[in-house]
Length: 154
Image (cartoon, rainbow, N blue to C red; front, side, top):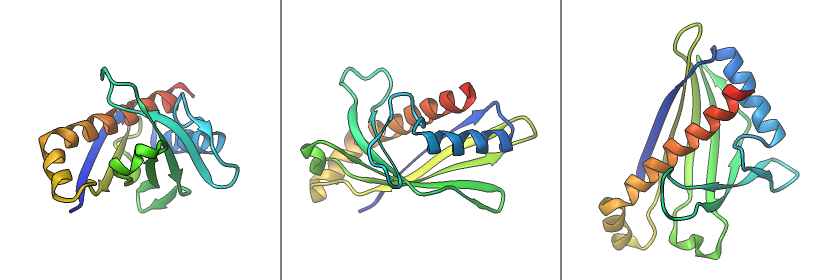
């Protein structure tokens, strides 16, 4: 069973400036502050993720990005992330779209919408409903906050 997760926030940047900053961040490996280039070909990074304020340390994930493209008024960056550690089999991979859209001439909206399939069959679905979905939402919000800080700081 697929589970869905989403988050969004406003950026104090005009759409063209936000789009350029996102393109630049993807090109130089600086999409998030702690990211480091993992492979030379393609847009692949290793980065720590986890909800802000969590007492647990962040998990390292491999993030694969496809080049962004303009679809009507929306700039879309498809992405996939998976845990690096061997325990990753216990955690789902996330397939998502990072989207940027103009709100007005001074503001843009950055959002992420994705899907994942909980591991462990029916037990995984029960665990997800009991709280993992909240962790996934908090993680998406933290990711957008980190990306926003990078884009606005450029």
